[in-house]
Image 1 (cartoon, rainbow, N blue to C red):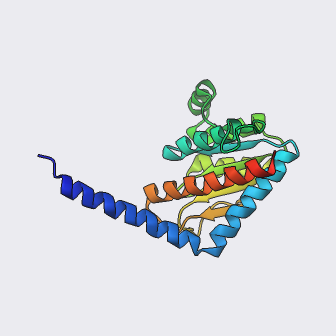
Image 2 (spheres, rainbow, N blue to C red):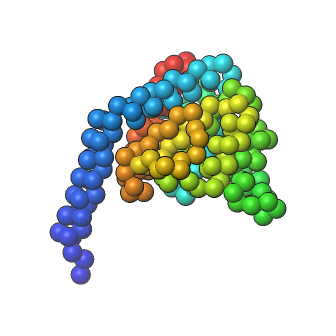
Length: 196
């Protein structure tokens, strides 16, 4: 028989963990400043004709499509123009061809090399910050003159280079992803306000 009381208690533990991480981010001036900088600089790039590319693996890939959808479709403002945002990795033919003919580590970088232009922006989501395809995407974006933003977890000493790093102070993957979405929603709201 299912132990509803135990499951409910565990749910409270998970919610407490998320609330504690939200409180930690609220008091982390570096994360707050990086989030605002990423939002305003992305909005400026879009205002000047740039495109936002977003990539991630697993759950972070889901967040990439979620955030691009918020910008292409309406987020809060139902009357504003659609904003140019592309979630990389969702052209199945291109992604599987790259992974098969080259390597999975190249799937985002090769798409950036085909599509991105100087003045565009890359948001790269990786809870560890060290996934090879994310590192390669950041490198390709830098070489092409994009603004690079890395969404990651607790900062490691060997993080790849990015113009802006949003390091959520946790090593718990689900909690990091939850906060990435909170920060991403804020950024979408700011971009929407600044890009109308």
